[in-house]
Amino acid sequence: MRIGDFIIRRLDKDTCAVTQYKGSEADVVIPSVIDRYTAVSVESSFLRKGNRVRSITVPKTVESISAELFPLLCHLEAFIVEKGSHSYRSEDGVLYDSSCYSLVFYPPEKDTECFMPPKKLGCVASGAFSCGTRFRTFGYTSKLEEFHALPSQCPNLEAFVPEDDSPDHEGVLIHGRTLLFYPPQRDGSTYSIPDGIEEVAALSGEPFFPVSVKKIFMPSSLRRGMEKALGNAEAADAGHGSAAYLTSDGVLYSRKSELIAYPGRKSDEVFVTPEGTMGIGDGAFRGSRLKTLVIAEGVSAIGNAAFEGSSITSLVIPASVRDIGVRALSGAKNLRSVFVRNGSVAEIFLRGEGRDDLIKRTGSLF
Image (cartoon, rainbow, N blue to C red; front, side):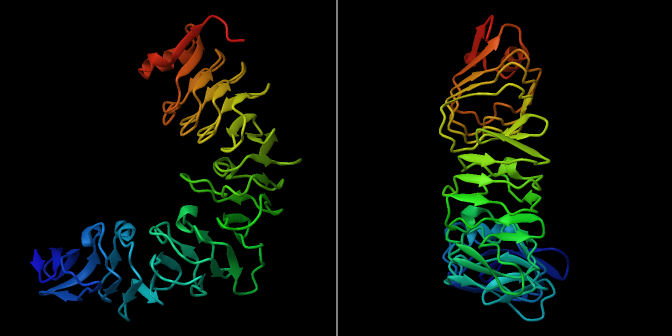
């Protein structure tokens, strides 16, 4: 029901959720009590797409704000939380949880080149920078252990700067043995991941390293994450002694000889899997520039979304392939021809997917 400039949804006889703001003010103040109902939550429909709201003041009674609201706050300059809240806190217009451990939302129109969050900050939530940021440097302490933002949400970021006795990792964010975030604007065409790092915290959906980083050198300590990090790279180099990875001609393999990541900007138009390759991993050729991929005899499996977003138009699948992920061709929009052996698993798979248009049958592939 509508009460003044607000539409609310009653939760019980005493409380309500604020579902929409109908007023025209650029600086919105949510009352703690609307009619006789205490406002305890703000829902995703609170503002419509295209709104011009500059600031939102939240009463201390609000216990939850929908994360789905944040991507709509493209013009926001400040979140203001009334003192005494047990759920949220605002510092210099930025929204945190009440303890300032988690950064909940950063206003995209906040105009500063250096962001200095509270020293208690330990986590940047996945929606914190959903409308983008302007800052170029990010001050951090040893407490910062989780950083869930995507590179595209911090397009101007050049460096993380330690604000305590944390080691300076040349502008890159590292916590313990995890490489958390690589600044999109950091200089350098190559990057050597430091010795001792065991994991790259690559999030699905976006390349971890920017286009400027063409080659990544990996330490022997690295065990996880690189298979999702090479979308913008031209080559990876695992060196010698790696417990988890192998590289050949810049392509990344597991120690079990599964091809797990073909660098997205590797310039070759034709690639033949080398002898000894046992499988093609999930998303292995995601976003690659290849035109023709020849999977050589001996490969036994192809994973889900193996060719998603790639430029591959022609694919050769041998009879040795006995296992094909149900979503193997998902997102392979450029694929025009798949050469298969008559009666092979690949032919049966393509028929089952209703992709008879792709099948090029042949008695012998090699």
